Image 1 (cartoon, helix red, strand yellow):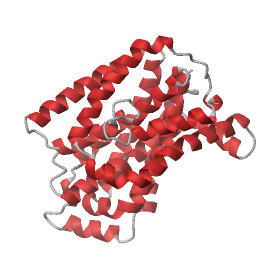
Image 2: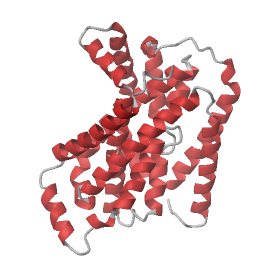
Image 3: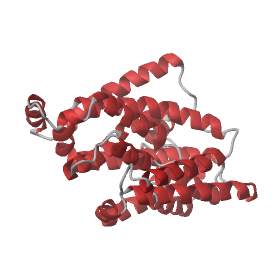
Image 4: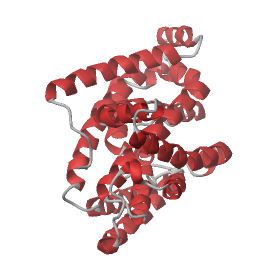
Length: 329
């Protein structure tokens, strides 16, 4: 099994409602001081920048984020190209705010995984409280796997945003990643799948998976892509690799979203107001919930081939858009 018991339809509806309320609470509680006044004054002005992000655009960005966040196709790449096509990169201020907005709406995707894997999170809480050895081992593995990305992000984050956050690096990553997936699938049957539980991932393997995740700091690479392949190359079954990738993504995305809220929260709210980010979070949560459940079921019966071909197709499309001048870097 790739996941714990999936909730009933009624439970899912209650979870999605709870996720929306939690997202609203998160935005209210973490909203920087003075942002309310700034957003209100911007809304009054006829040509306000906050009005530049329409609700339908917020929904589009949220759905794109939610659908692609946990698939091995790169949500960062899709959001970058989407913001360019929507014209949300006209000024440097708006580009910076849009980049931060894209990270903050990941809160929706975070809540989706929290709902799907709530039994695992309960197990980890029991582990921390000393009631479950399995839960404690899983917490240990996730902490170890998170360290490389945190350290590398603290050192290189500004440089990566300045040098690599563009359409050309994303396009290259899409194309290269597509080839890598197809080659991996071709030789996949030669792998020795001896790790059959996320709690049994050795510390060294968790650390290597963490370094693999750090590769995804190159925009367009995809965190789930490199963690999935890294885990499977180290002997994890596809079920274990998928589950660990999703849980590790939860930890990483939570940290990144909270960091961006603390660092650029005022820019986001001054630029886009409150309603648009909230709509984006809810849209991302609903889309991510559906996307994750689909991927779990799909990979029970199929290899990663479809994602390799998709990356090649979207990379080729992005290349055409760049060469024809429809979008710039």
